[in-house]
Length: 317
Ligand SMILES: Cc1cc2nc3c(=O)[nH]c(=O)nc-3n(C[C@H](O)[C@H](O)[C@H](O)COP(=O)(O)OP(=O)(O)OC[C@H]3O[C@@H](n4cnc5c(N)ncnc54)[C@H](O)[C@@H]3O)c2cc1C
Image (cartoon, rainbow, N blue to C red; front, side, top):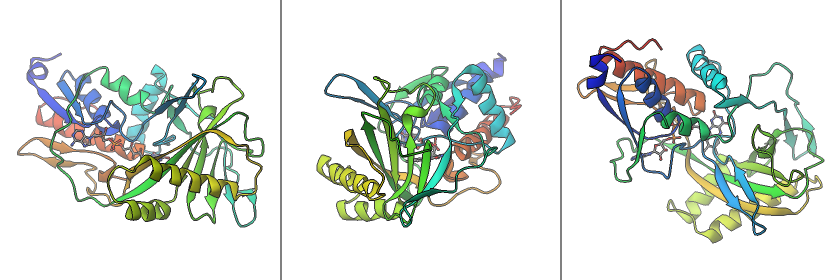
């Protein structure tokens, strides 16, 4: 560690994937980093929900980002390092599309499509692992610097069944001709997430933006009541039943609202982050690039580079 590095002290606000990556890249160059997050822990939209059933068994759902892919070589270098450390693993899942108009699965994914990565054993394990290398503080009252970025909402429906969905031939599928459902993912088929007892299966469904926007308009921007979430869960599950597939009764069902699931615009150009030289402030996140884990990681690597350059430290990223 160089003496210049010891003198540097950086605060990172937000322990989602972009904040966690930025903090870990700085820490790796010897910078003292303190991470602040207003949430309960690291992860942000790469979250995992833990639910305990009446019989005492536990269910876990990745109810934010279900997985991610990588095409950028800079991000690929970062992610392959995580893979070597066992923080992420490949989800060998097959995907398709279900068309509600024809009642058939179509567009089965061809071999050789992009590798799907998941955090192990949860999507937020990546951030937790990266933050463990830094100092994470829960700090609920930091000012929100960026407020005017338009966002798209999404509801996630978490469902568990006592038996596998035998009529679904894939691990994930999109919906065609559905007013309210966009995707479904078999959560328990990901590495490290098998249900106990093993014949159970857990699924996460995502609503369409249009459905979520309509509900948010009706119930307002505040945290939805348990009744409002129960209604959303019923409506989304009814839509799944409308597929005509023979679906067993769920043993658990709950909806979660993501009021700002996806930024609707990207605020930075080629820089992939916003950098204010005079205050040495780097702003990173998927809203700088594109609404994906990969976009957030890329923005974080660029933000970390700007800070390291300003501290005259080699970025080497
Ligand atoms: C339902 C859903 C499905 C998705 N599907 C996919 C997918 O299939 N593939 C994919 O690649 N991506 C997907 N995404 C998007 C992906 O999750 C995000 O692009 C990525 O996680 C964004 O990371 P981030 O670090 O930029 O932001 P965030 O994860 O939002 O992290 C921001 C952090 O900052 C904290 N924070 C906010 N304000 C403050 C404050 N004032 N003070 C302190 N802390 C603060 C928050 O608590 C949070 O922890 C999905 C997201 C959702 C919600």
